[in-house]
Length: 233
Length: 119
Image 1 (cartoon, each protein chain N blue to C red):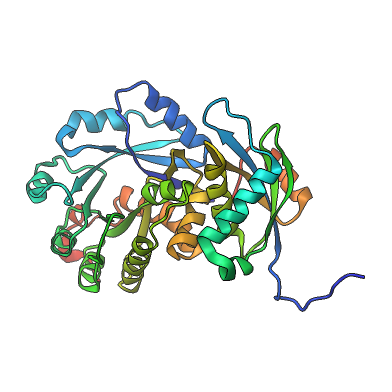
Image 2: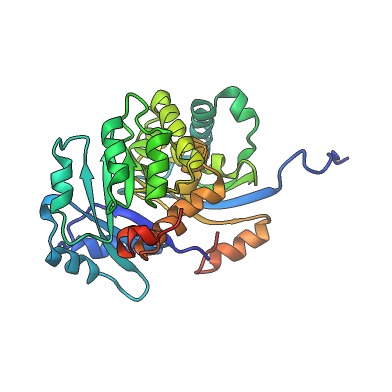
């Protein structure tokens, strides 16, 4: 049986409501939750607070997403994120940022911005990201929210499909984050949306919600934990 | 007389037990409203030709509880779930919850009752 991971729950770890949200996610079939903390609020204390939310049936991890789309000085922001969280990602929307982010060893995932007006993720970046054992992340909620009001932007979906195809050819795993349509949805529904809207195969879609994020959270795919030079491929 | 088709022409049957969960105190939509919304969502998402490849229909639905059973096949299942999800969100402030998927109605009843659901 698969252990599904809910990537990037955006909630205050100190708030009382987070416990209700976590139990709701557990009811929906998730076995691990990654709580996203803004980079400016990140500290060792916040990490411990997030990890303390774990229970026997639900593991909780901390993540930080640095937004290269809005933050011009995102490399400095990334350098300030210490200690390195359980899951570190960079959201990109430009080719130059994508190339730079794919080279940084501590970055676990490259988030493809859904509000793209051009293709910014190419095979050079994808190959480099695959070599440094990253994953490519698709934020689902912007797409799903448009799905609810039947106002999908087909051009953006086409660009996203191409960028995912590029990643697939480079052997880069895909992970899906933030599967919510106003409120969180079941992993099966998130996989269905990935399959039918973004042309990701069914098994691959299930992997993107379970084994691929688990590989990062367990440290299996994290290069800096075991030394870059010792890793093959 | 029953129509006989070669194996593999049509997909294998799948029944999906679902519930429409409202955000507030909104009452669930009627069956015809949901069916209309599903047809609209299918045309919007996959077009006429894409929808022609899909097989989905509402087998049972209770507008009192918002629970129902969707009949589809293994090839159309991801698309049918996306259509149902879009239709549920388009018809009102509802989210879709899948209670179980099975190839038979008997299996579906058993699976929906079981507390641990598998994919």
